[in-house]
Length: 267
Image (cartoon, rainbow, N blue to C red; front, side, top):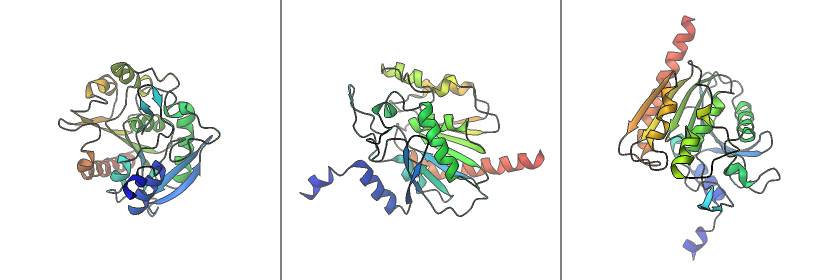
């Protein structure tokens, strides 16, 4: 009976429990139109960058033709990665996720066709800016669709020094075309935006066995970027086995910050 009961626990309750066990503090933060759940570590070192983690799209659809009632991911990869990070870190929930799907301003568009819309990006921008007050710089980290949001946010937020994407949806039109999905006609496509500013360091992790976002889909976008580094792992899929590489990625982030500070001193 206990096993059956656990299956019907809402996803956001499960994620709250996981975050609590990992030692993260939960808070509710207002964006522009939406409420957002955030999980964070103790904010103790504002002289160093704040690491901002953005999850993938979660469960947008129950099947190819049926929209999900609750897009909240049941096993959020970004929480696992944040647990390995000793820096001040912030996990930012997307609008209408984590139990807020029935909020007044929420509609299923915001986790389907408008998942990367201006309303979503602007609301997340406001949340991050409020939580990042006093920090010297920001590092944005996104998995899958969270990578698309990280790129769009990097254009808007002040003091972003690095962006890290993991199996990222960097060219939305190429992705929908590849899978023969309906285009995300209410979303902003990072591939149609100007390249990120040269001072923003970029690291993009690609999985050779990723069937959700095959590496070839993002090649054209990557070729236009100025300060982009690509790590390809031939045996990795869309979700496996990025946690294993996270200590090395965190070292890269640290080295990028050191180089950025040296550049500022030279200027």
